[in-house]
Amino acid sequence: MKASIILGTRPEIIKMSPVIRELEHQGLDYFILHTGQHYSHNMDRLFFEELNLPEPKYNLDAGSGTHAEETAKMLTGVETVLVKEKPDIVLVEGDTNSVLAGALAAVKLGVKVGHVEAGLRSYDREMPEETNRVLTDHMSDLLFAPTDGAKRNLLREGIADSTISVTGNTIVDVAVQNSELLNNPSDTLDDLNIEGKDYFLVTAHRQENVDNRERFQGILDGLKLIHEEFGLPLIYPIHPRAKKKMSEFALNLEGVTLMDPVGYLCFLRLERNAKLILTDSGGIQEEACILRVPCVTLRDNTERPETLEMESNVLAGTKPEEIVRMTRLMLGKSKSWKNPFGDGNAGRRIVEELCNAQF
Image 1 (cartoon, rainbow, N blue to C red):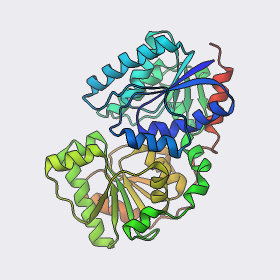
Image 2: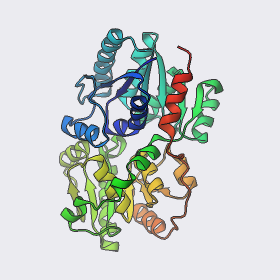
Image 3: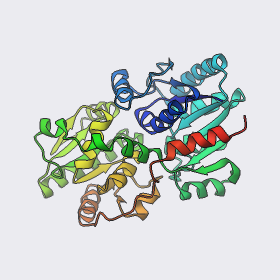
Image 4: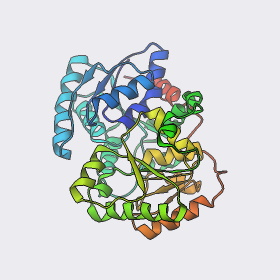
């Protein structure tokens, strides 16, 4: 078996890292193709270094653009590499344009597709990610669902049971494999002059939020009210897209400390030491649940319903008063919820299924 790992964004690097490590551990034949969808090569390189991953064999340097521009550029670039390398299977993870382009290029060439983190659904077709994940699931030959709920979603859509494996979520593997590093003191906290559990952590970057002036201002107004009520710092490592839109819309920002994006392990330590996390990221909803940090999601829906069921997370939307109300609610909750995302062996299970597959 020869596998191609296709990724393009930092969350994909993180969540695919346990699979790459297991392929390395077993001495299997594979290569990494990086589409270059994210903005910063230096930041991506830092993630590879921190997670002890080999450098990608190919980098397409696709960069940013409209959805059509990004996907088209990646589709043709991936096709060229797959024709040259002739892998037996392409592995993609998540719901980005890189995932859709990688899966589609493979299918058109008759190459098998494995989708890591299959079966997630927000049932909101206004989200580009929802379209990407649905299409990718229905193109895939092997579907690695992180939870039983994700598997049920796939079965309801008519996908054959025999193609689906419930593996757990690879983000648990990442937390387990880096647990010692997470216990180390954070230089970032010292630099910001804050103590553990004495600040709120914020992330907001999704298109439906930051590209919409009213929604983005609603989030920022909610953060201002939280700062006024609780008197604690709000730390916001701002995504380049959000920073650009904040400037373009001339939005008001009060009570929030902006900082440049940080490496993944540094960010995990920021998460672990936060009093509460406010985010529109699906992956961070999972990480907050695993790290036992209360989470308020700045969206109207989520493809991680397990976090709502465990009561580690709540949906707040983008109305300022609702963001504050949900923050009060989550600060008063117990942190005794269970982790629904697996035992930290998802990478091993995924590689086992690859090795048992017929090509």
